[in-house]
Image 1 (cartoon, rainbow, N blue to C red):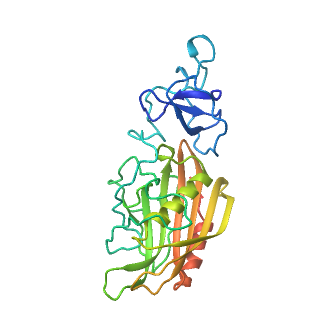
Image 2 (image 1 turned 90 degrees about the vertical axis):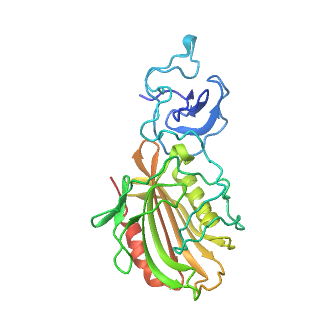
Image 3 (image 1 turned 180 degrees about the horizontal axis):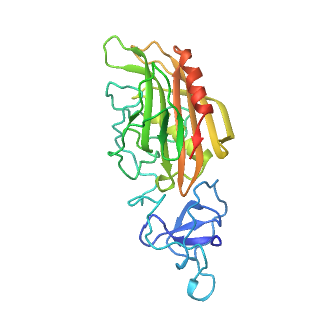
Length: 303
C-alpha cells in the first residue's frame, strides 16, 4: 500500500521540513508544516521511495497518523543518501575537467539558449573516492550498463569531476590535440547514477538538467550553441526514459573541431530515488565514433 498524498517528514533528514508525496512518488516541493496547502501541480515523478509505515505526516484527523507508507524521521537509506539535505546546491567553483583532459577548470558562463546555469546545476551529495574501474565486457554504474566500447576507446575509468552524478564511469577516444598541447579533444561516453536527493525528479526533468549543465560547465568559458535534434520519451530495456540529442557548435582556439553531437538519456532504473544516466559526445570531425556510441546506447541494460 502507498500513503495518500500529503506532506511527510523530509526523507533527506532535513530538520523541520516536510516533502510532498503525491501518492506515487516524492516531489521537489517542501514546506515547514505538515498541514500546508497541497501544491497546485506536480512535476513528472521518477523516484519511488514510498513513505514507510507509522510516522506522523499530514493531519488526516486527530493525531495526524497515517497508515502504510509514512516516512521514518531522518531515515536516509537507499536513495536518500546520508547528507543529501541540500537540493540544487550553488556550484560556485566547479573544478571539473571533462572535455579538456589536460586539466582546464571548466566553469564557464551561461551559454545562450540553455536552461540550467552553473549556479542551478545540482551537486552530488556524496563523494565517490572509492569507485573502482568497471570490469568485464560491460561498463556499469548502479543498475545501468552498456557494452564496453572497443579500441581506440580506452578502458572504463572512474571519474569524480562530474558534480551532479555518482559512481561515474567513462571511456574516451582521442580526436585531436591543440598545437600548444594544452587541450585534448575526445569522443566521450559516460555512465552514472543520479539521485533524487540531489535534485533529480524524473527522466525528462533529469535529462533537461544534465543537458543544460553539460553545456554550462564542460567547455571552459567558451560560448556553446545548442540545437536539439531529438527530444522524446523512450523505453530502455523496458524502463521509462527520456532522450535529448543535440548538436553543439563552438569555436575553440587550437581545436579543428567546431561541433559535436551530444546524447543524454536518463532512465528510471526501478530503484528508490535513483536513475541511470548515459551521456556521450561525438565530434563532427570523427564521425566514425558515432556508430559504436549509438550501438552502446541501443544496448543499454537495466539490472
